[in-house]
Length: 217
Image (cartoon, rainbow, N blue to C red; front, side):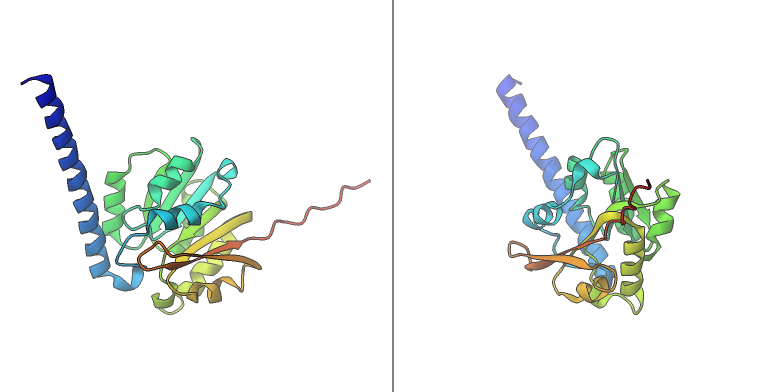
């Protein structure tokens, strides 16, 4: 086999691998949606435009712990890992073991931890990984369809676990999440991304910084 044929064969093999990986991702995503539709925000993963806009306000230089609720097949995971510091940590939490098993096999990064559990238990989950607070928490969970009591519990737990100055990043098709965020976050910035299926609303809830005591004489 000459060199040109070898290169062509390698390209075809690489393309087959990428297509196979893509199909495997979609298979996992749709299966998860079919099994637990009320816990998955969309039947289509978020667009790269949504990912970029949602993460734009993050101060990566001061991010030690980033947490994501409902990572699905990891649409946000690699972009977050690409931007994080080498000594930072990404913890993703999902109630669907199918997604957690998939992510544990698909993402090989020492900074990444996929946890099967509820976002309402975020404080215990990060404590189990050696953290007291998170810098940012991202969520694509469908607040409007979560079981009774779960949405307010998640909003309260998220505010508690964030460090002063940290933020709760939420993307949704409706503004339902804002009703649960407002009791805890005095400042909520809002945005919108048309280039997504479906177009979605974006929210950033900022936790107030602690008041600094005046120095004593």
